[in-house]
Length: 262
Image 1 (cartoon, rainbow, N blue to C red):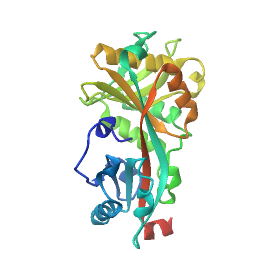
Image 2: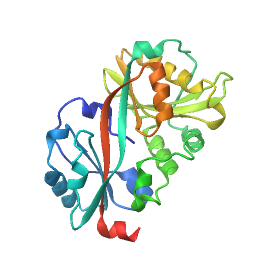
Image 3: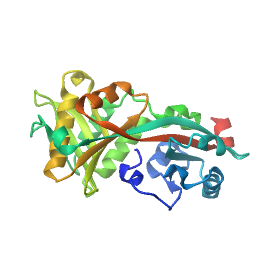
């Protein structure tokens, strides 16, 4: 559930705290999201004023990693803040990624495939840790359940695509959720391989197929992102030719009474 890459391609003037229904349901708290881009687009006190006006329990702020002072500027008597992680975005030309692709490696998932999607997400992300782990107030949030909820929500929509990835044996090997709404690129929002298929080439096979799909749709590139600590998958992307493009800090701003009670 990262911020769409297209939001970082142009200057934004519409700073707004948006309620995150998926994260609110999963945590039992009122959770919102705020994008601060480009890095020089707002001062800390302006961002804090928006957060206080929202009245939310937790606001997850995504801001350019160049703004290293922002996290410290967001604490007040009512709120505490800290940097939870750094998110890195990578891109590759669709034509380059499509090399060596196999046309039957991806199977579209649509409305009615919710059960299969739930099962794959559960197996792939059972032990996954992300920025929620940095926040005691979000300790009750089940990352797998949140990803399942989000994946079900985008099945069958016009702006997203969900695929089941097949291994060389023809059995389900992984899952890929994509934002396909931009005319020039496809963005991989969630992707992974089931445990028994890891280390056997299923992951690059899936990404090559994503590249072929993007090229067939006349897209120029493919985008993907992850936390900076996920070095294993970053090395895999580098071997395929992905290049880093944007670095974004994730800052959690939490009401002090919520933080103290957690």
